Image 1 (tube, helix red, strand yellow):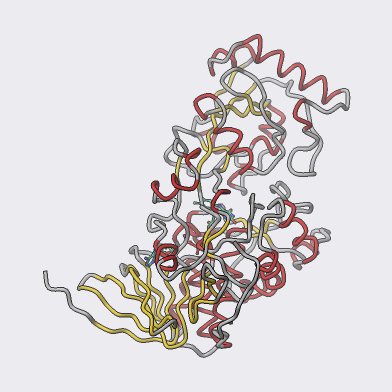
Image 2 (cartoon, rainbow, N blue to C red):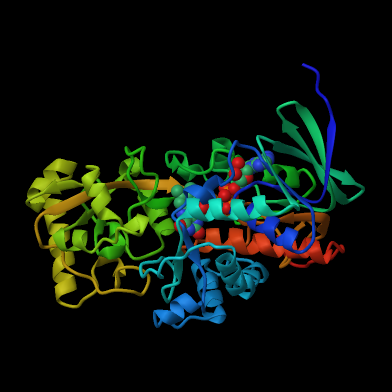
Length: 470
Ligand SMILES: Cc1cc2nc3c(=O)[nH]c(=O)nc-3n(C[C@H](O)[C@H](O)[C@H](O)COP(=O)(O)OP(=O)(O)OC[C@H]3O[C@@H](n4cnc5c(N)ncnc54)[C@H](O)[C@@H]3O)c2cc1C
């Protein structure tokens, strides 16, 4: 085969057509830049389109209308607390400082938000702004498609970054008819998502997740991470890759987690024993699940908890899963124990101990106080029928990656800016630190996509030294 080398040129080249890439593209075009968006697969959307659609924003009009008091400062405190102080505070501040403007900007683009939901991990007040994720991507694609400044090119995979001296000047990409030099006069934004579909790369950082389920955009194989690392980019948060608890191990149709624990279910292992405070982050629940025998445990609930599900929220839509036969149902706890093949005596005594602690107003084992984070009162598991939801951890995202400054400029291993190279979305490290707050990954895609684009517009490629990052 003859490989031809063509040239495309734009002010800014964006690698990846997920939420981060599309937000960056529309923002850059609004700022007067000509944009090429390269998307490796045959459709835009990546993990964003298949996500749960939860975005974390604070201080929005939607929260206000529901009487929820929230603020930039509280969001920052929560991000730092959830991340166990391991996040990069400058990156966390970039999120909190820009989030409200991005929420309003998304509304202006025609993205529709549902009312704020209650159950959300790591949030001291409810701040999940829910969208239909596929609709959101379609809407942003419509806006981008209507702009004369944006060219969306699918089935084109970026392979390597091009440089003139230290300055990034574009990417070499692979399209149907050969390699193309795609030149960027003002900068390249990497918005290529994470690496859930590169099992070797995941294994290198998180071997404890070898047996987990991996779900995400099919093109998410760490290309952006590799391209930037080839130029000396630094990385962070890699040891904190985590799976999300609540994935049915055998269900291939519904890729979302089910979190009945956040409505009061308990989680028991194959020995019929509880093993964790079920109200903690579903990422930490994922870690705890992977440590149990066979990496599969059961969420146990009764009829009252089953009824408290919320059909419009994917992680709390119990009814649909019941209809799909994913819950095991029994008239008694003894029968349920037999169905899930756990030792009956241990299972019954575990539930009895949990129920009596809850009814006496005492702390059950593992110090569980609430349904989720600091929300909701615990209820006993008493009313038949009883249900079990087999659950393992699924890695939906890698939540770690390139070191950036507050303007999304990529830093090298010496803390210096790599001129004209920007990153946004899941390819970026530093926001989540040790754990993840619900909605902060989609939030980070939209917000940092905008921030990166504004930085290109402002031409903030000046080399800058940063201290203190490893
Ligand atoms: C099932 C599921 C549920 C989730 N639910 C939530 C949620 O409710 N809230 C939340 O905050 N987060 C959630 N997440 C995580 C969140 O969806 C992602 O972190 C976020 O969408 C990442 O956005 P992105 O734009 O960075 O990447 P993506 O949306 O994944 O887009 C990256 C794009 O880049 C393309 N690409 C990759 N390499 C190249 C290349 N070399 N050249 C060209 N294109 C390339 C990919 O094909 C892809 O289309 C969920 C994830 C999954 C899988």
